[in-house]
Amino acid sequence: MALGLDTSVVLRLLVGEPRGQAALAKAQLERAFEAGDAVYVSDLVAAETYFALQFHYGVPKARARNLLLAFLRSGVVKLDPSHFDHAFVSAGGPGAVDRLIVGRYTGMGCTTLTFDRKLGRVHGAIRIKP
Image (cartoon, rainbow, N blue to C red; front, side):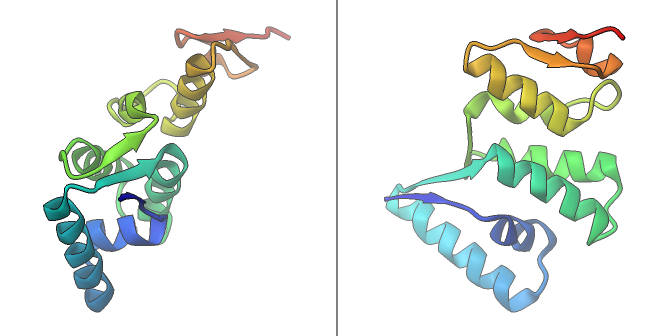
């Protein structure tokens, strides 16, 4: 069976709160791993988790990025699409969600058009200059 995790599940796994739900999420993930089930986190869930960690749990941006990146690279879950973990690697430049957008469009064979200066410097994006 293949499973896709919702943001609420990923947050419980990362934050450990509320404890009862975190324990249930962890147990479910362990059962899936033992059964050889594929467990996925979509790019949208990764983006929502990134912001929820900051705004609802008070996790600093760099720490949120590192927590999420470690989870996505743990081998327990797979990011879908798989090449998007790079969006959470570095600080500076365009934000993580902007990098997710370019990555998704690039995967579709598209070039991203933007007015954003930082995003316009990313491979796969073109800045429209006013």
